[in-house]
View (cartoon, rainbow, N blue to C red):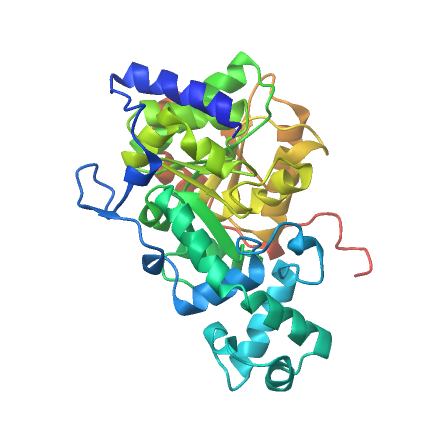
Length: 382
């Protein structure tokens, strides 16, 4: 979600909803809402409510938040997801048992306890040395209304962890009521450049999600994503924006902040809060969108190109959730090809008549597993 565009879209939604915008409200004044109700009790954000001792150790190991500038490009680079998965298993199988137990141990002790090469043990030791810097950075981020949580923490979205398993992001940064993320939603994805028929379908899907009491999960990109998210907010619902970049900049926008503060919008990203845009990050956050969803609706997809196609095919192969694709006259070829790969057709002319989208999906698109899909590999050597 580009911050300047997001601000314009949300501002328009706020004006149509007839609510006031407290443009001068400081980020430090934002509070964590304990429940989904707008009038729920609020408290000052505190890192310890999000991150356990184990979580802070994981954050040190798997993010660049506490590292000096350019240190992430050296031999002190944070662990990649695959590296953390291996280390997590070694910790669990060792006498240490928990990530926090790594603190205060020499490289030699870590190498022996975890059966690590000396270089890897030294790298882990160096990353853990930035605990003081992490404490300062966390305080700064939380005062600005941003939170962090890791896969070992209580408030990490359980649906995301359960769906993606070892592919779930190790670290999430975000803004908004993190407890709302325990509710799986409706992922709405599609092309940035979308015709009016597709835009109308995205708006209807967003409104239908709210009617079914489900959040809309959006990638926040121009076009389909934002149209669906805006429709949900206009209907008084909840939206999750899974961002590929610029979390901190987006969260500073006054009108975005208003929805966040009201408990209507949650922003999250697996990347650093100040990360810039990259195609790789945009592709990588696709699994986050699907992992937060009960089911996904593909509004418009190109064929064999672009993030919408790649994300939908990956979700179908992995069996993360049922994938629906808009069907009917004039839909893009990519939609038709996704139907051949196992997506369920959601006819454009039927959507307006659906009273409960969740019930419709349960009847027409029962959960499928990856083994049920044939992607042309059956007769090929594996």
